[in-house]
Image 1 (cartoon, one colour):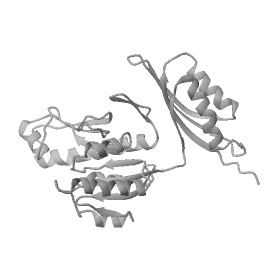
Image 2 (spheres, helix red, strand yellow):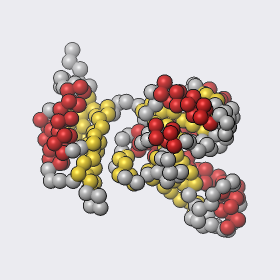
Image 3 (cartoon, rainbow, N blue to C red):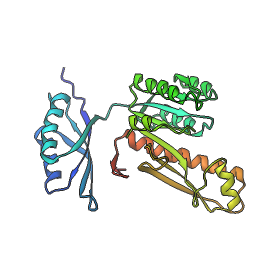
Image 4 (cartoon, rainbow, N blue to C red):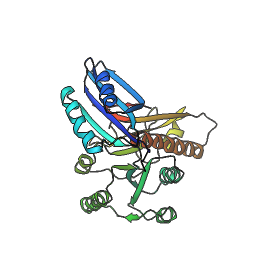
Length: 289
């Protein structure tokens, strides 16, 4: 009996901009019996780079396997000097979550994943505190407690990285993990680690930022999700959002609203990344929503 289930893929690419790229990609897929289901592109005139995301499918009776497809794509990519990636749409992204003592983002991500709202497979949770081992158990996710001190930071990071690699994680989410990663670990996780932090206007650093914001009477509180780099909290931004507040709000209101915003912003960033909608463009990102 012939399998008529379609083979679906997502192709992302970037390359120097020139005429004929869209035509070449479209013709490449057409010649192999592919049907384009979704496509988006962007020309960055400042850098001269072209970005594209194409979701396409082959009918189930198409005998073109992924190995042959990748081989043919490599030839096309060479002609246009493309950087490219190919992913199957059915593949949930293996993910490790890292958290400290604030669990709002962790809880939100686990719920969304369990509800089928995020295409990720949470393989493990790593924390420098024990607070959320019961939450992890309720979702049947392995929980790894790795304490971190100044003296043990290198060993703790090595252990965390071993877990990340052993779980085959393609994404690491710092869901309010309140430890600064070393330059070495940031480099190892380049392009596959997402962090979330508050982003007030003006910004407040240090302890209890929501208390500082309330004391200054800010009118906007917000959050930023970005890729982790060696520049602390300055990696390419994936998503941001703000919530308006006023003088009638208490500091507890600020904290609750801020946490809600952080959770929503991080969830969107994780979703877009796991759907291969985010392409890094130097210090910025291109997000095909």
